[in-house]
Amino acid sequence: MRKYFGTDGIRGRANGVITPELALKVGQAAGLVFQRGEHRHRVVIGKDTRLSGYMIETALVAGFTSVGMDVLLLGPVPTPAVAMLTRSMRADLGVMISASHNPYEDNGIKLFGPDGFKLNDTIEREIEALIDGELHKRLSGSQDLGRAKRIESVHARYVEFAKRTLGRSVTLDGLRVVVDCANGAAYRVAPETLWELGAEVIAIGTEPDGFNINRDVGSTAPAALVAKVRERRADIGIALDGDADRVLIVDEKGHVVDGDQLMAVVARSWKEDERLAQPGIVATIMSNLGLERFLGGIGLGLARTAVGDRYVLEHMREHGYNLGGEQSGHIIMSDYTTTGDGLVAALQLLSVVQRQNRPVSEVCHCFEPLPQILKNVRYRSGEPLRHDSVVTAIEQARERLGQSGRLVIRPSGTEPVIRVMAEGDDRGLVTEVVDEVVDAVTRAAA
Image (cartoon, rainbow, N blue to C red; front, side):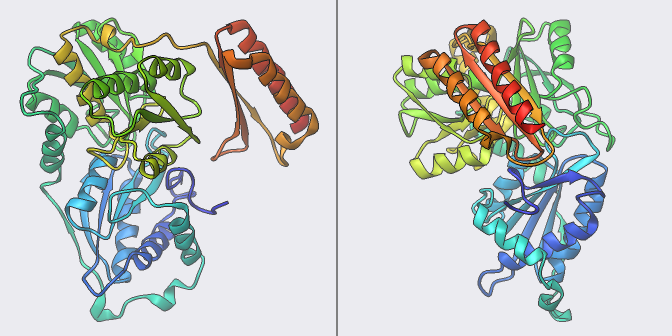
């Protein structure tokens, strides 16, 4: 177990868990770990629109400069922009200050290596050891302190990058697009990119005030987007989250399209164009069995990983896949990006819509999702999953589902909760199976 890092960087209540003291030490520790060679080292720092971003950014700058690293401040930009600019600007390290889809009270610190990829567990443990060590003994001398400056051309660079992921002949002419930027990091770049590609753009969630990020807008609260798509009779709605590394689609009828359907669309398109590096894609254990069956029907496989886009990406890199993602909308296209990119994923979908000249509702309905039930059981201590009664209940549940369904039991990586998920062709059976396992876990937890 790691002390500070979770499945996606360090995250928690701003000025509670994520304090200036912690941010300072993270900057110092990460700066020391990534000083390799005699050259002048640099780090790029981006953030979303939370009020606490100012506090954390300033503390990180103090930490990095105190160990001799120069700092390039990007301001509010999407997480994938930080990953891209870390490589483009030849930085030794990239930092994104964001708590993604969480409310404004939370914040987080995500780190990227010089290759633009998130750090592996080994490097995160090395940073943690330094955070709890005697950092004051390794500070730079007065003559070796780092400098910090703000970079002004960031937004234009990312807009051009996103546009270049489409072919030169692709335009969005004739499409009316509603984009919901969640009052977050993409509030400028997403509408600009879509407009420059030719779309008629209606933008919501583009008035951040430090407090309203993800509040009743964005990919975790699609009701506002659904209403606006229907009101303006738009062809498509695009909802990003606070740091724009995930996306959710709303079709012209106001129906929500999740990451599983989006991966299915892109996988089929890339297969037809012979662009898939492997005969399949990578998703997590939470992706719907309907996706797996659809892919099998067109000759593609589905490799599953633990929950978390970092695990999807690790599997993609290890086994040579170039498409993967999560049901929640983290879509990773490694031909273009080193992390999930909500805007780039949306552009790939739009290119398919334009090429097929069909409504989004038809393009994005690749398969009928199987009934899927998810329930959480909170516990105080111990390991309820090890109880004999729970082990027996899980075995019996899997036997009942057989080949017609799946059962996934996993402890949360961020809170004392056991997640029980089942899916299958028979909704009644799925519900019974989940309830039986939940009852067993609840009794064991008590």
